[in-house]
Image (tube, rainbow, N blue to C red; front, side, top):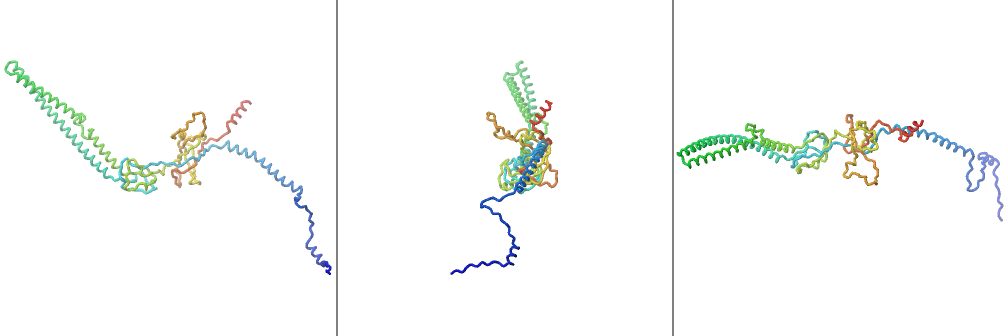
Length: 400
């Protein structure tokens, strides 16, 4: 038989203390899946905050519009373009004579000064040409002196022949008189006549030869040998030989840095006008920019410019617009665009512009040809009101 369950009630003191330490909080019964209730005050509070933000934005809108309009009207005087790069004088070092490289006196990327020796060619064949030209000049001088003496001899021969002709004429006249008196034979007369004619022809030949010789001497036998054409020609050949010998030593035409030097080594044969390596001018730099044609309205030569190079983004260079090209860049292309078929698409052209960099500042960082840059030119002319607004204001003023 099961025992009855006995209910054990807490002691009076324990029940009172427990109820005093743990107050009972009434919990409202909630249905499953129902949302928690919100009061009307909780709904009004975020709506009021949202309205304040909305009205604040509405109040800021005209201020932003006014500031933006002022910025647009007063701005636009600085023409910015990032289609720019640093440029410098570059030249391929070469010479107009052919030869074998004897030695190279510079290293790659070395800075050189104007007139410094860069490389030399083997000079033996050119020295031989100089010696040959010297000998030719001396031989020409001797030949001209001999021609002068020969001319004098021809004049002497012509004078002697003239005397012989005079004698022959006298004999001829005497024989003719004797023939009339019958004391001379016809044969003697014919012989005297023949001798006179032969000596006259010989005299004429000598005179013609002397004229030819005088013409070779420039028409004046007293002209100095060093002023005669033959001597001057030989002297020019000697100078040309000297020039070619001097061109075997190649020097820098201006100060700068040499590059691609390892391409030329001693023993390499260089044909005339073959580029050995390159020289870049590091002292005279400029900026080649290509602004859009729509930005050239108020851009002129002489306006100040600010240059920023991508390599040094925290540094700025100052310069001046040196020149603006008279034609767009595409006009110099191999096949310029020809939009004459009727299907014409307007493309904004770019016009080359050169900016001279002010190198007078101290502690300038080195610039190198080919670096990308950004150029800002201060045209001094603000953008102003749009054209349609200006036209509207003018029309309104006229109506009033």
